[in-house]
Image (cartoon, rainbow, N blue to C red):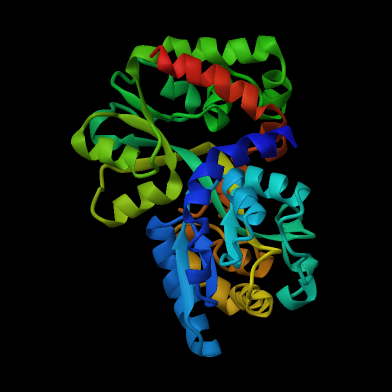
Length: 350
């Protein structure tokens, strides 16, 4: 509850400024997601066809995530968001706060059609994506094989980019330092393990360029500013498709994550929300998305159809799943506030 209150306060003042205009919101069904290439793909695969089927306008809004935004909107009675794509931590906290509507799994084909990790009473998995080790083939003498190579300045000199957040970055540091994947969170839950992760980061501190926007690593690669980066797989694959043939992905210990689709309990279009979730979880509809952007989707039958070599760039390809490291959102809900505070101090001193 303290976490929810803290997050809500961040957005409360700004939301009050627009509260007087709430009556201006229309009643159109609204789907909210994260923007960029993903949102463009969702519009083509899901939104435009659904709008034609129901003969209704579908509004598509963009947001950057954050449980505080959702709790504040609920507190203020803002009902114009219907289906929202949320990250793992926001899903856990929003579920605990009772913000999301229960899912009718029979309308989605049944729970047995999905991996266990993508099934919840009030949410369904949306996409699978990964933070991967990306590198510029033209600027390295050999292909890096692991996160350990990412930290090897002698063998791979040059700047490297890391996400400016404790989540994913501390896991990378411990994996690079030789911690077994199954021991990473056991280690990271202890002061000794946290100190070990920061010591590892300190080894390459002068050569780190921090990024926050997902587009930044590709921008840095394009400028020749870095030789390696921890980056979203979709961003690198998109750059490759746009002609960046020098960029490569090392999938070993890719940091696998999953977003969720939820129906806001306060949303004003409950029936349409249920129809939309049912529609985008049909196998023939869900299979459109990976063909437009290299992110995995949760239905098991769809996932299997994208297991060929032609879709080797998907996080859900069997080869990439086999070498993946799953980010533990529950760990970050419990430990994130303290670790992010420590991390921010570290990054500030860089």
